[in-house]
Image (cartoon, rainbow, N blue to C red):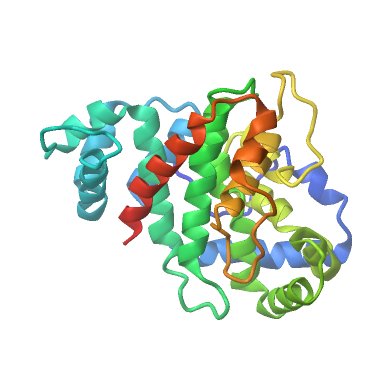
Length: 302
């Protein structure tokens, strides 16, 4: 299965988009065209995206692909030998590392590293800072995944990917709408309005809507699209008990409270992580697990 940035095809977000005004449609189309400016997905990223669409992938196939990418292979070995896994002996085989990490964890790590490398190529865009974007994306993904293991969430297996890709709309705005992005930033930094309110004032749509539409073009599963679309609320009803969008919202808030913001000019969320976590009915150890896992992966970004 090949995933690309083609704008063809219909999906579950299209009905939502049709309700946006013509002006918003213009901005959306212009922003989504910037998907084509991103480097093409690597073979390993294509394969990993395929696993989200229930494509069968074996450990052997993934190990073969990782071994062909020297940088990715080195980072996978570096992570599995980090304090996160606490191994006494050194692991120097990708196949051994794959068997230790497991398919789900391997997918999360390699997808994070592959996308971060792709996104970091956009360093020439004035006013856009890839490093904090990458770190915030990975932090949200890790924490959303941890929360989804202890909460009755619909489609918990998609929490990491939803957290990782939830803010690509912000990057698309920076890539394709620089004047509008400057207006959004000015409105945000000179008022007390929220980012989404500033986006809607300028564009008549938000980065969450752009993110969800981008994921539709990448053919990611509908539950991930829906979670990303609503991760700033309102949250849809969920047959599983709790909407994944709510989990993303809480993960984003806690990550911001840790001072990990998407861009340097954004205000961290008010409050402290432990107080935000408390009403969710999950273990306090989640914050420790988050910090350990995030620090281990963040080191791979150099």
